[in-house]
Length: 53
Image (cartoon, rainbow, N blue to C red):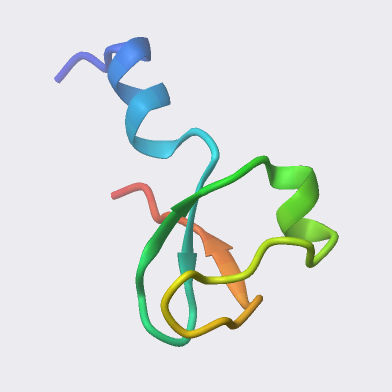
């Protein structure tokens, strides 16, 4: 199966998942790693990158 770069960017670029409530957040990686971004639902700043299957 061929990987389309536009689709990969849309699905995985700048998307993070909250470790507490599993909601998705789109944010720049530098701000996430600096703990400046918080989850909208649970107000946690424990975020991880979305998994590529």
